[in-house]
Image 1 (cartoon, helix red, strand yellow):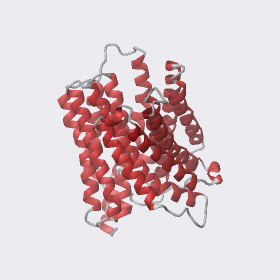
Image 2 (cartoon, rainbow, N blue to C red):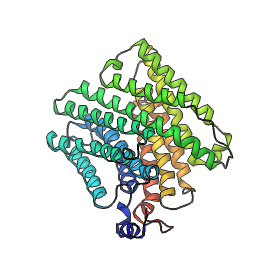
Image 3 (cartoon, helix red, strand yellow):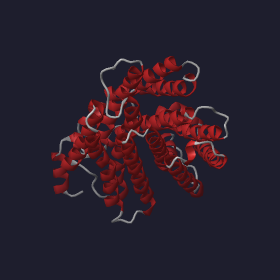
Image 4 (spheres, helix red, strand yellow):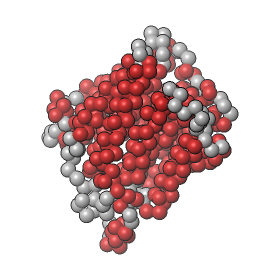
Length: 396
């Protein structure tokens, strides 16, 4: 970065210098509030208040295309600067993208006409995908093209969901949101495969890392994208032995990766074991989907929430806790309370996946409280890091 670029960057309000800052904070605030709000709505606390499409549509959409999409955008729009060497989105363009995301969340929550929600919400992911493409295409970073492809597929899933809300088609909404969750799983598979073994090697000061298995990584990525499409099209929403076999293979593949990455030293480092556990939840979710397709499990919700809560939420919490430290110039030593946050989070995930079938509402409350508290701990401890300048004077 030359002197002029540095001066320009330092002139930008710290909160809008890179994408991780607004999207990690605002996405975590949404996560902190959304799950408890959903459980309260289930208990009839808001009889006179309905979001656009109703509470179920809001819950399905906002945890995926609101919360997860924000964190994905924040991570990718920041990481792409390191990958390509070109400046990431910052300043006024980032302010506009953030304002669009916030406006979409408010439009959903206050129950604005569905066309307004479609206009606002339908723009966010395509803009993120376009910015990613704009960054990786000039330098021909072929290894990052799949990220753009999955972002486009996720945007399509969002569009189908919005159409389902507009036409009051519950089946279409369900297919598109569950398919969208598996598109996020494809992103988690790709990004997790890059960073978890790297973070483990660096965090434990190992001289050598795990030897990559590119064929397995590509098989898991392509396989997850394929099953995501079958889910969105509705083909995988009914028991099917062939699709179940694919899910079983994906589950075994993800767990093999977990075993290969495993090092007993991770249990000394919360920033590592939290990521390893989150990735293990992907394998569990795949195997649960297989068991549902084999008619062993009666409820697909077990698989869906193993993926959304255990894997997606867990990987997000672990990643933002680490990435925020690194990109604000701090040592990779999180506040001690984050260890409790990771423990609470995984207890909540177990409650949502296993306890709910035996004790529905108590299980939901336990899961909601654990989820809300864990993200509240992140917000309370990390918000100052996100809105203040880097401690090392770097303009990022």
